[in-house]
Length: 481
Image: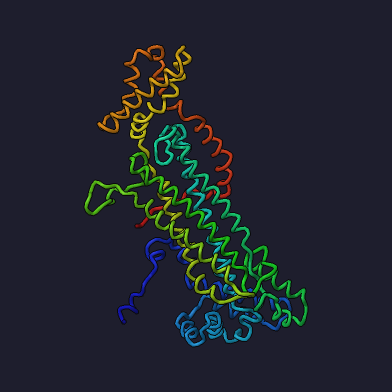
């Protein structure tokens, strides 16, 4: 038991992966110092509106705002079974003059909801948006660089029409751009819970101000402004609607789905040896197979993204079972699901940034794969060229069909290279177009408008979205593990 007490379990989200900034954002110190700031805002606004609160009391609260006796708070909570009152008592202990007015007229959700569900999430979303902007910037540069490089497209994970490496990256970018817009909207929609009282009616404050409704409204406005918000929710129960959590976490879950798709694609391409994530000089891929270059960063993103995606089930169920003005069965769940969602999103974004800053492309491998499949894809072009040269479409189709099957048998049954082009060149039937074959098999004739699509998408959709973050784009990510 002594050993267990000395070395308690720590979530790997914090101990192994999360950034120091995000880990602190959801720490006890951040949480409880924010509570104290909210109590100071409340006292200042109440004093300004005429309640008997002195400058000395407010100064005492400000002086001791950072002095948190966590051991005392834990002991108080053990006795009281109430975390907010435990911290009211702890704060009052170091602020004896201000003790009578700390938390005056408020309910627990004044500090709880406004801190853990509004202030900290808004700060976190601002951080995410900057991280996401950097990821999008790196991928945009990658897409621009490889906008013209042909590569095999895949549908059903079977070779399909050619695309370009840059165009494929734009498919990833499109999802990230959607996520960024959704997260911006979610951040901007978050409002302060405000000063609403025990069931949202503000009855305690109306009593404090002797029935003066205008002062109650002004109190709400002043505290909202002090906390850095433009708006508060006009109506709440004891808590703000838990649908707010659904909105916020659903957008994080959507981001998780995006990252999982991107990193799965990178893993598939790594298997083909066409594209690889960064691989350190001394990195070990396998303890038994020293030649391996495993895509561990992408695998980590996929692993954590699955966790992020499923966490949305918690706020959905929590919102659905809140009784009337509030029930406490939201509390324990939200203590887990909210921090874990934000911490997980932070980890996958920082890891994805590291990946996108070091993606390696192998054009020669891509070219070899194209050569292997392109003759089959070029059959329609060959038929059209023969018809233009005076041939019969049906006769040509049958010739190509037979030669294609013979070439496919060499590839599949003998393990040989695709020799369809050589078979066409040897067949006298195709003599009228022999000089056109090289042009007909130029990969660039198979990529359609992909380069133009890349240029337009980056210009119209991506770059304008990144403009507000332009001055903060240079920070790079180095992974410690």
